[in-house]
Every structure is written in structure tokens, then in C-alpha cells.
Image 1 (cartoon, rainbow, N blue to C red):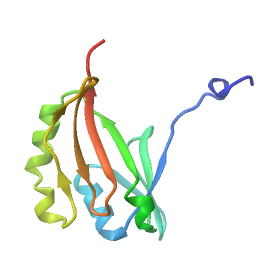
Image 2: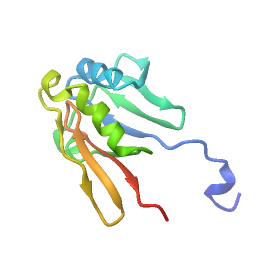
Image 3: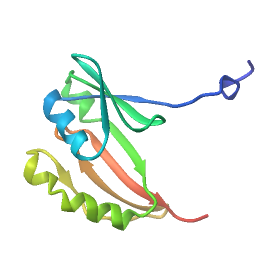
Image 4: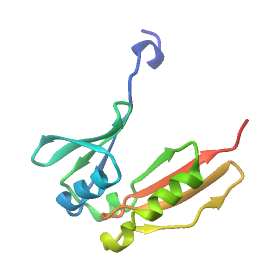
Length: 127
């Protein structure tokens, strides 16, 4: 093996914390993620096998408040409308959603999960 590409890498996964683990699991289930419990303090959260992360019943404010994930979607406007219709900020105290912003590289909007993890949802300009 000469480099990482020779390892036939299948996925990359982040670990994020939860201030209220049960509430965070509920939030991600409502978004349509599949939750698979690993043990009482951690679960595997996925859309697809390679589109996944680990959610932990562990909270360190500085760590969680600096955690960010980027999810690229094909139709940002449609996805944004779908997120808004879920009325997540009225159901989850700390969830906040921004408006879509145009950037030099593409478009995105932000959403904080119930613990403070910052999600970037966006799509890139065509090449």
C-alpha cells in the first residue's frame, strides 16, 4: 500500500455530541435519518451508509459549539422549503435556521441542531 487510496476507503464519519441525547435522537429521526443504537451512549445516524455520523451522549460546550457538518443537496430551494415546513425551531428550543445565502462557490443555509452543532446545507456552482 503506497497511499490512502490503496485502502479502498468506504466512508468517513464524524463524531458529534449531544446536550440532550434523547432529544437529539428525536430531532435527527424527524429529519429522516435512520438511527441505529450502538450502546446506551452512542448511535449510528445515517441517510446512506457513506452519509453518516456517530451521535454521542456526551457534551462539552466548546467542542459541540465548534462542530460543523456540510450536507450537499441537489435542489437547495426545495430542500430549504422542506426544512422550513417541519417548523423545527418551534419544536426544539435551540434550533435556528438562516435564510439561503449566495456565495462565490455556490449557495447555502445554516441550521443549528438542539445541542448547537452547526449544519451547512448547500450546493456548489456548476463547473
